[in-house]
Length: 330
Image (cartoon, rainbow, N blue to C red; front, side, top):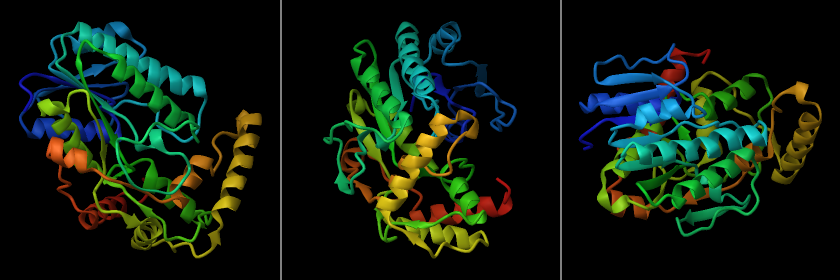
């Protein structure tokens, strides 16, 4: 257990809010850092708030001064956007926070990265931390997270740990399952590929556990860890189970992976050419996520961090479905 205050960036987001809640439940002090606390529900004397942006170095200095640890979960996380925005938030913002953490005497800096930094648009099974970063990226997000990892590794003046969760989901998720649910309700969801591809996913509470272990375990300093639920599932079976539970017909039509990828590439070109169109309904990154197989060997996290997923995939799906059934418009 950390003996001082833990700064959590991105505290008003899906993952950050869960980290803050867990810290308070453990009786620990936390400084929640975010831009908009209008929906932040952690109201407790142990949880202080700091309205701050990763562009504001003075505010970051104030937040980090005297803190014991930083868990950096803030990021621009979306399949679509401008490269300069991802670089500004995810790379330059991380570099700025690292400087402030070092100046403030922070003991350990835990960086929340992404498994997508190694994704090369191929089926991969049992991926370990030995795999190199991708040489070509399907999204500016993945590229920026890989560049941010490089920035973290360059620091020699504080302890750092990089954690790469795979496909975070759970109650309050605003990305993975809500996007698929919306697309299915609109009648636009198709099974990509043959529908048998295995995927690792990670329940949000298990991710929180891994991040606090990364903060506390001495052996973790300087290391990088993949985190999953350690239970690969046929992705489309899980998606169909979720949709049926939400009262939405599961997709029956299939689209070959190559066809879907080509269509997504064309959509991206069109939307880049005509920015007023906004985000395309399909991107190459999304197609690859839904159509490729990706599983990970998390032996390092289990052996060195002592990580064990305490919420199983079955229980995780049950909790998630229950949440979305209560908040069907989410």
